[in-house]
Length: 354
Image (tube, rainbow, N blue to C red):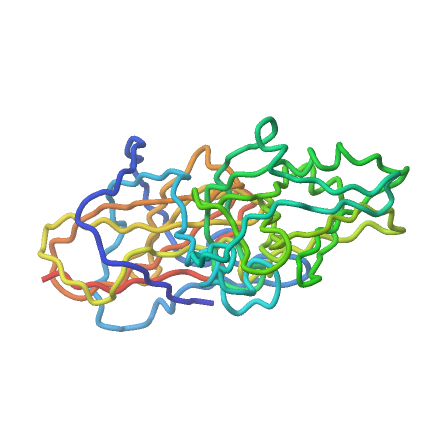
């Protein structure tokens, strides 16, 4: 499958990437490269990129070299983070960002009721734990069945702090965080603790509030699909279940996402100008190990490794190169993961050199 994703305007200079340049290498893309066809949860994913016989009129630049840098920093603006997800029906993706309302009626409320198979139910004011237990971290957020992804600097209290305050009965194995609307998605307790889940009360430096009754808290978890990122949490249930719930993973077609952040197809540049392409890539559960570029319709790919990248944050990349030949160009970019897969959906950008 091939899909295009274009973002903001092409840049002629870098944008604050502080890592030393990594020099890319060319990768022959004749045939089906390892990882383009793979199976996941019984599904076959065929990431066959382009028709190599296509005569589209684009300039075909092979084995394009340039300067590549990456980091795992950067955040998504709050209005995009909470609203652009759009089509999903639950959790983080479902509603407008009422938690970030500027209305005078917005109230910050961080009370949560804890119950279930525990010796005594309790109500906790998470703000009272903040002084001793609060943590701040960058965390990615990605839809299970769609293209949206984002990253935010979140401030909150580890879920483990709440669990430690509850006197659990023997055999408790499941946790469910319920929002004010009654939505709750059960999770294995061990999974939530191992993933360092957090009860978040601040996103990108902005305090969460609510214009309705209930809590402003949100549940965030690294390397976990956004449907578990429950909003306006009012209750946490710790229960003993006969079978531990399965954790929903991302649809195989929406793993290993990659976006180009440059806007406006059709930009024109002078021959010899340095052009910087930039974007982000993210996979739920497996680190991104390389970003690959083709400017000749998939005949050759330039491979840029992302050594040291971790799975809990996105990869924020830049690739700078130049072209002497005038004409229309098409860039396609994909990502590779540590488990050997490539992006099921590539991203493309059109531009002109004159």
